[in-house]
Image 1: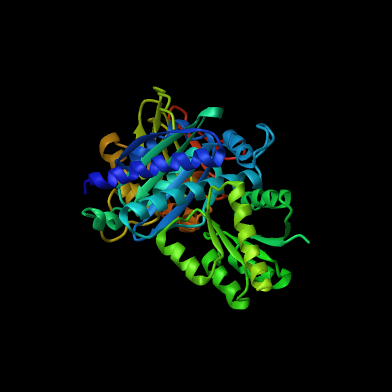
Image 2: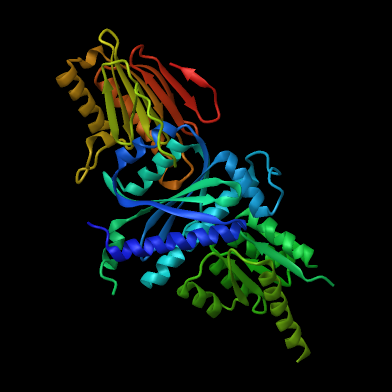
Length: 194
Length: 128
Length: 162
């Protein structure tokens, strides 16, 4: 099934809105790059992650459910998560020194806010209802978290749609990534939304 | 006398951020709950003047918790603070009796003015 | 994330896939609830690494056989026999991964994957020399086909050699 141009436009707009929301949450400008929105093979896309697969990251995964279904993942380098925690708490940078329940909660809430923004965007543009679930936070290898995300989001299919977006928080020069796996069947009725 | 607030959010960092804002602005945070079930239990125990309530939470979500609290106390003041900005959700919380709805991420001033409006509504009713 | 660093001697294996080497490569992967099965023929220095997601292939629309322990092991063993002339009885195995991840969907799949892999290897007469499975975090494994040694690092722990 090809990705409808309208759906592609909505996804791009939702990512744009997500970057604005990220900026507002951190009180720091965030640039957004939509890296890809394409059908990918699950083995190839996870293989491409393996070179950096043992990088320590924090991640936040959840499901978006309602009139459409999506899997959501937000990932950031573990040491950068500490800076994000300070930004959210309006602390001096460097105050948070180790990963603990506070930094885990910061990543949880960032995931909540970003996924909520994406859900709201889909809701508004498609005139539907879609809600994020309670986020699950990970502190682990990038490869492990990403593989699990693909495993859970693929529904045992060999090929999935995958949205990859990269944010750069300019003030602190930190990159973070966001991924979405839209479940294609739930998007069928959106193919001709007008 | 300081107004007494119960904060309900599953993210501890949000509870911390809200508590800081409220305390700086002269409110007393009497309790914190991380899900809707805990929220009702603490409401019954602490009888706060106002509750701030997230929506997406484990076990019992914020919309159900709002309904449960209002069923227990029809005069309860609950302000929803959430990432969800969707018509069906807004309608549901307004119909259920929420005092106000604030979208995350929020400005501090928005929280304080919403709380003041809600509490003044009660005061005005008493004076009338 | 950034473009991966290209290392000429390394083969990376993604989810539901396998790689076989006869040229002394290092075959690597990172595992969560999935199981990585390293198969090695010592005299010929031929090794393969299979990364499976689930224990058993469903009856309808299974897709790639290498996603599942049953059909995946069958496929890699067939390829090793037909294309590399390796007899299963000459193979030894080492298995890794099968972590219990936090999310509900993946919670106990790791244990089921490990159990199924052990059962199949036993039924094929393939000895499991080493295994490191379970826990609650990811595994990075590097299988050196020139020696048969597997370096394994579980998140938060020191690297071990098997």
